[in-house]
Length: 77
Image 1 (cartoon, rainbow, N blue to C red):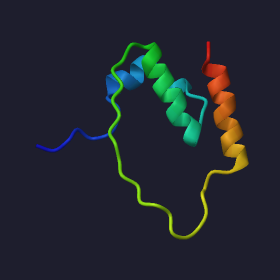
Image 2: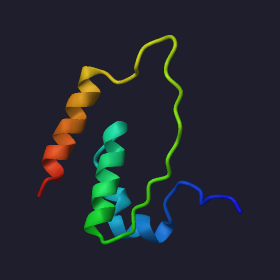
Image 3: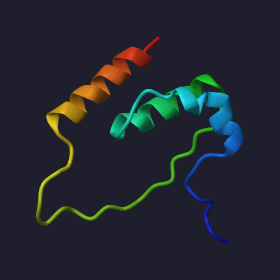
Image 4: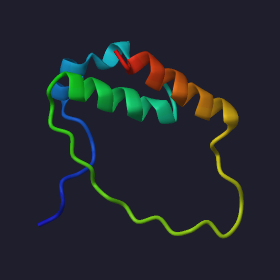
């Protein structure tokens, strides 16, 4: 048996108000999980194994990090 796919059911997206999500990028995940939690939905984490980076740079910039902090601060209510 295959593990369940990672994604959202249509009913869950409707319940969390997907159409009004303000975030983009990495903070989108934070806002969606917060909305799911507030809506009383079941949240499951499916682990993934990442290998260590051997070359190149992270795509996360200071601006992306700041946006994530702003979203977290806004969602604290």
